[in-house]
Amino acid sequence: MIVTFLISQQNNIVRIRRCIQNICEAYGEERTDGRGRPYYGFPKPEALAGLDEDALKACNLGYRSKYVVRAAKSVVSGEIDLGAVRCMSYKKAREELLKLFGVGEKVADCICLFALHHLQAFPMDTHMIQALNVHYKRGFPNRRYKDIKGIMQQYIFYFELFGKK
Image (cartoon, rainbow, N blue to C red; front, side, top):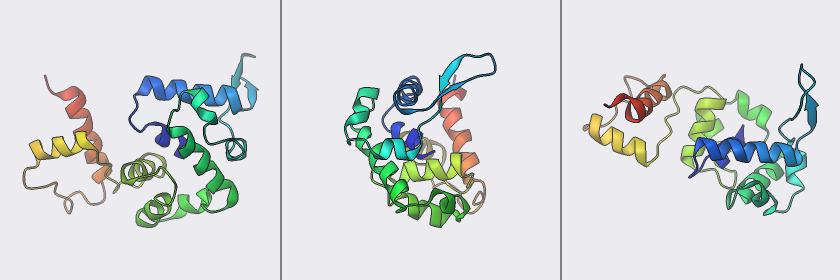
């Protein structure tokens, strides 16, 4: 869950998918689908933790390579327990995720919202700041939407992306 959000920084969907596919093919376990076709599972943290920090540059990760390798090392060493993070409140999970190298506030909020289903997470980037400045001149009504801010963030995001004509 963490890797895809680390890769998403300053990236686009097509490139993120290609990076994930490259990682799976290079370090994942080969499997077979129901029709007998091979595919590769996502590698376990142990497979990535043993890599040199720049090894994933060959998978088109660029500077993000060290983020992924260091995150895998943190998981394997027990520095961060993803099972425990899944059970934490939003605030605690976010704090824990921010301890990982390469994870900033937006990535932590994306993980909390999309992977951990903490609907109060509200990922902020420059696009969201611009949208809020246009549509919420007095500030986003956090109290009104406190338990579903993440859902509202997605509505705003998609409106800005697709809704204006």
